[in-house]
Image 1 (tube, rainbow, N blue to C red):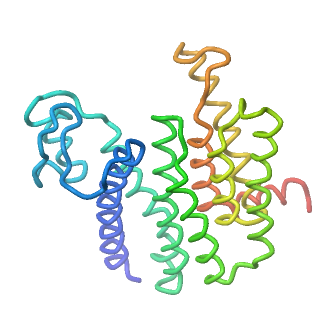
Image 2 (tube, rainbow, N blue to C red):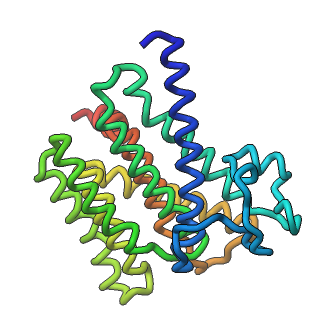
Length: 260
């Protein structure tokens, strides 16, 4: 691709990411409450219907100064954050497409689909401390089908799925559900079937490292106390996205460090 073509393609991918991020906000807001996904968006405070120009990703939030056009109550910063995060991650995932051309499209498409899925898991668990089976179970089947289509070895996918589900199943059984929720088991299965072996190991290491760092930071600023719960699914989703995008370079770096 020429520089001009790459720039145009990157801008288009970013716009798609912003639009997908806007839809993800609908899922994040409605799925935990059991609400229908159809129908126009409404202000969460006054329930006023949001017209089209108030629903443009990022722009509308900035134009309205982060407030509802009718009741003027504050709108959560989550909305533009998810939209910007989706666009940014889609651009990162699309780098092989921009550099190598359409041959990379199937992998890029897979990565963007599961970035979107994991962002939904990330935000819902952060806000509600719940991982929804309606998200993780269909996504696990789709991850297996997608990876088999892409020619991933089924043995590595099976091992990843067993590791992901088994690791959290063991914790759940040993602690009798006190350490983690059973939703983490299905999320582990999803990540295992998506990342395979040894990508699942990378996701686990990253998620626990980031979770520990965030936990210490929240303790330091007084937002959490010792013994407070943290949304493990949020950190697993973040680790999963990182492993999806950069798992191979991370594994290669680690292998060099230990001299294999």
